Length: 103
Ligand SMILES: [Zn+2]
Image (tube, rainbow, N blue to C red; front, side, top):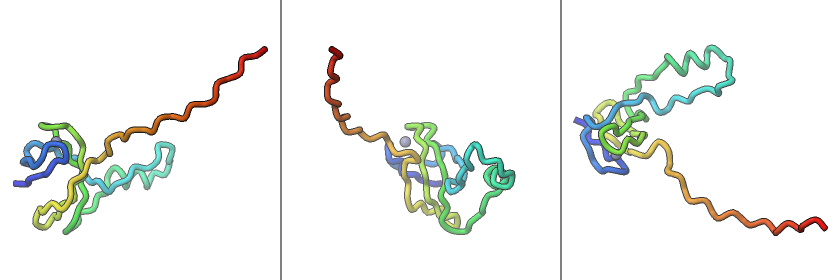
């Protein structure tokens, strides 16, 4: 059994998660008409013996998507991170000088 250390919920059994596929695959641009690029994106996957970056979703917990780095030879998990960084606070916008009223 895998234990995935969710950054939001802590260590949980993998039964609470859903595998979401290879996290190293990058989708081509939507306007990319290269058939080969889309074919590779949809159908071609590596099957590495070693470290593999994977998407997992904590479906029975916080529902966050995670990137889990797992060794496929022994299932040892070396890192877990949120797939999308939480929004950061934006600095306050600078105020523009007041407009001069037309005379
Ligand atoms: Zn969670």
